[in-house]
Image (tube, rainbow, N blue to C red; front, side):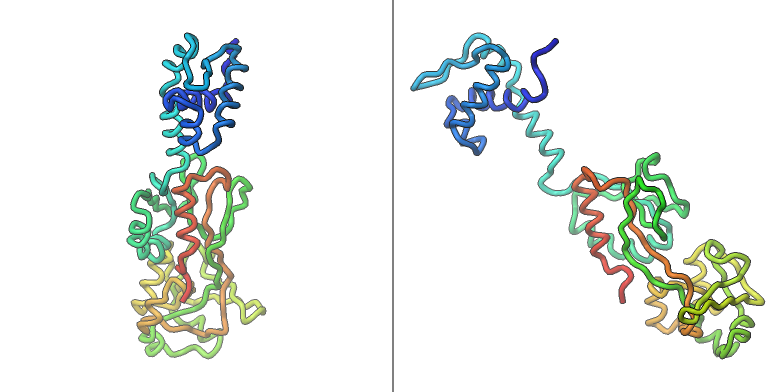
Length: 299
């Protein structure tokens, strides 16, 4: 069985540096340590191997025959270890990071900050995987996900990015034509746009402060895309239960206005999801920190 183990690799690299430097003192300067420490490490390597590698004198170090043979084999170790260290701890984040998210979040929140991200981290390349389904991060080998809700899977880490409540909005043109509702019956009589992933059969479970209120529109168009629901509401096609953060521009431009603002929907959480906190590559940590620092959802 070999007497060499992985603990010897660093000591062999120090041995090579010492030979190349010509002295313990020269090696100590290169390795940013003390002469005595280098001498101790070489002695420890010789003890473990059971052979003398260097003949010491007051003037110089001389390789033994065995030391010369080992030096010839180990001379690439310092370069190899430096290369491995450069990969593990790069001077700046670099490489590819995959991020899965749905189209609506991508268009509303990520697209506007992509240029800033690329300017901040020019050596990181993003792989954006747009999918409305919740892909398995581990089996699909995906680094990060932005999702609505918090996963129940304990193998995943969830960092809350934002939390807010749904509210009702419509275009001023629609309300001018159909009338501003003063009560639930009038609200139910308006045309509605219902987002099918959120609402079942048109029945809306809302709240007036903490009091539950059920609203069932008499007429509604059903879509399976929150982004399309927003666009249809802007196009005067109905009242929509929307997230205020996703329609900031439309509100500022008066393309949409609140409807019965005393009513609100369920609270929803936006989360940044990834498989583990441990041993994250520097590039992945950079993306996480950048996304968590962004004021995507704030006014």
